Image (tube, rainbow, N blue to C red; front, side):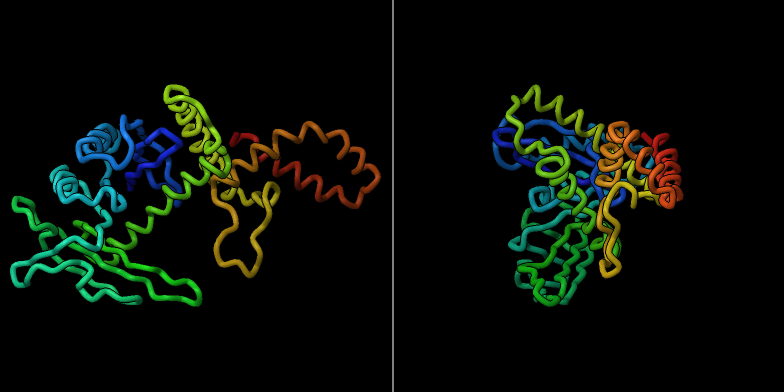
Length: 290
């Protein structure tokens, strides 16, 4: 799956297409827009066309939020034999051969319900083909209340397929958080566009490397040496592959500073030698991954 998104870094307006992999978005291609605000259909089409040759051997699903909900973009993606799942605004209209034109806000979607409209027109304009529209509003749970549901423009065959696909969009938000205010603190960067482009390229490489390393370290089951373990009461994992990889790089890079001190400490506490040897084994397993 690939996801389209746009973000604003101070005065820089960045349009990006990323690959969803292990619940994170790995940047594939990006460009700075010469204006503020939303991107146009022409700019969206151009950035997708750039990365399609890289994915020609795969079945690609394109995801996008409400900025990318134009029927024109959906029609073009369908003509390229791509699957799509784009979030619609609730003020869009749908029309089928046997029903009157209705606004999405009037279809009766409520918390805890879902709807699926097959083969409908999603605009009052003529000349566009039909799409499926998946609608889902998650039920309220305890204090978690969603203000609105999802309306998804898609050519996927079922409601479940569309909602599962669109849930992967959270990976792009996690990636922007990691890069801006998380692991790389890009939010405080004051570079001009040329330097910022080089920084984004460097971060894209480092981010991809950290995800791969974190995945391999978790496969080796030695991540508890570099980050805090998950509490028994926690249902989801505490750290993503990215953070495990980033922590491992920091942990291994600081080992040389305390090797002599640890060796002396082990001499006075021989009952801890077994734990020390296990740590050395973990180091030996991690180092080939870096």
